Length: 317
Image 1 (cartoon, rainbow, N blue to C red):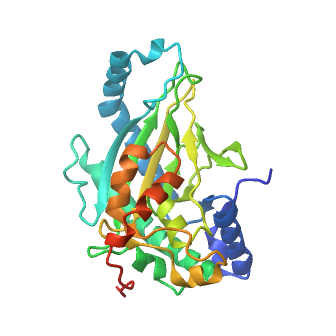
Image 2 (image 1 turned 180 degrees about the horizontal axis):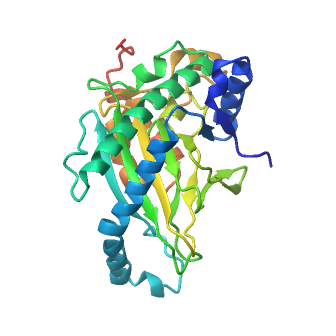
């Protein structure tokens, strides 16, 4: 099998731009995942965020996780567990309105670092969306406008730790799923592995790489591209040694954004329109109960709601 795609974003600025764009195109069409290096976010900043995240887990999260494990008897499990994940998490919201100052137990230095990191990731997400537009033959800014809704996009971060697990054969760090939203930017541990994606029927490791940002495409980009790009099933394998850090930021459509295949891409497809149109918030309500199931029935369910949507053109921001 070919190697996992790693994209050097700095090469967009020179004579290798064409080859780099082709590599991004191939990754989107055939992997749904790729790893970015030289992405413009400073290594010093990433090291700072990592240190503060690991300190926060040790100080505020670790004991709570151990209590959860004990209360559910997970360490004594004898059979495969399919209804819970071996992870410790908290969530931050950045857009349309930030809640970072309201989340309890965060040191001020950590709040400040996460706000700055989120701002840099937001810019990177919007750059990537325009690169996708270029490869898809969409006008610049199309995907950002498609995500916009009445209050702009939704942007949030899931901060996770996956502690050492005594029964990694019986419980997953995170069960297999596709991501519901738009484009996902992951800052993951460079020492402890565990993230895998499903490609051609086989689970493939996403390699830990220092100071990289892993990108994957969510269900909404599959819909907007009319299936040219696909969201890919992935999971986290629990490990018997080490604590894996994961900071996943989700750049998604606004809650009231109407999502549907780009007309110019439908015209290029012999089979025509392959996907439904729907309000993103409605999709998320459905996803909440079906996250760990196949995405296709979710798309089918949304088709039944199409007639109730008043679909207008994407407006210019």
